[in-house]
Length: 518
Image (cartoon, rainbow, N blue to C red; front, side, top):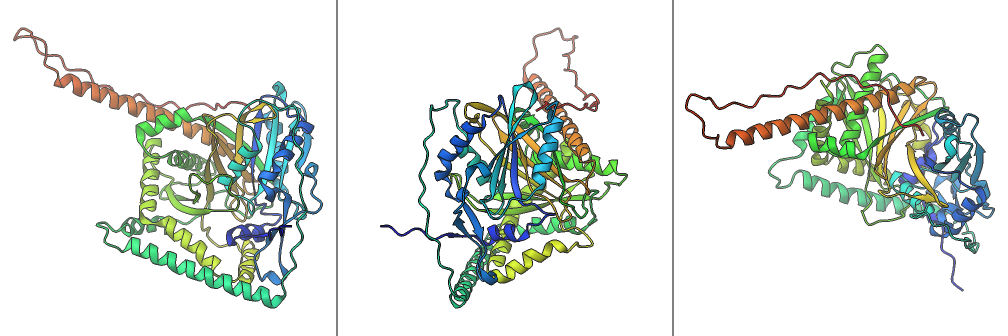
């Protein structure tokens, strides 16, 4: 008989999310998914249950070792019951977008219970227009945004076909691993710390060699040029206040074809477009609160996945962080996007991601006990000035429709956790030709956070219209240049050759509030 596998030990990053969490700082990632029809409870439970063997960690709980001498481990839950994780809930009348957002805020405010696997799904009924919804939560210690999106694809279907019956998987209970004596645990902790230190030194050597090698242009020059922006005018934005733990959630969405039009006209990446729109929205929000945006920057941290493209259904966190300071006083939406693109490209060339990864490795080299003490106590410290203003993440989802027991998913609004003195977090998720935004806010730090959503919509329409006009002007210039190179038709000597008329841009009207209802 084969011996059962030993439980998986968390990485330093996974464990940090477990240590950091508290009432004021729920650390789950989530998505509010809307479908074209209600989701039948029993059928959905059977569907999920038939796929749990693909992700065994969904049946495991975190176990913290004595005295924190090692990182927590994942162990099989001996009392696992899937119906404790798939929870039916009915939306109050009239069952519209406002009621669904209110329900999502209440659910996202709570903590996942540690005595059971760290995930749950609320099946929401009572939506008007005959729709259904799922509110999916997954602890950050179990997965990051990219792997969370992959897991959603595992539990949903790529077609609308529904089998007549779902197979009932059989599980064999694994024997619990005997907790090692303190002496062995201490020895293991020292061994892991030394290995982490060696990995850190090797990574730092490689980074230094890349930065100071024989490259014709030292990428550090660009990074040094951006340093003043990170130190100048370090101020709190209106929502950088201590958080209470109560959350509210709202969303909006845009067509990816419009994003592509903006990229074709102005340049940059999809992530640059997202950051530009968020930056413009923040500038509007700061002005709403009577503050100036002159010479001010929004310090935004963007999680960046380190997973390979062919890695599927990964668990745990494989992320680094790209910190960027974005000017709030850029004149016009196109200039904002150009400013964002310049800074993100400079940071990527300078090895900023490498520095962030080295910081993670340096932390991993410290003993687990010290890491546990650090992460459990740092949320109690509120600095005089914030290290950053907001977290903004972008996760690539399925380009084709997904289904839950035959019901087509129409929208997936993502949530990134926030807390400490970061009163607002923003997440974007591309799916089936659209870009979905989710804004999570602490009720005390940002009671008017929905205005930020409104400014996000306004800023996107401004950028789309400005980019479209820029593309039209470029087309007119190309046409005018082509015409000037053509030989003019034979005309009498006295008849001058007419010149094509120039085209001047018309003023951009402020677009009104518009979004598709859920």
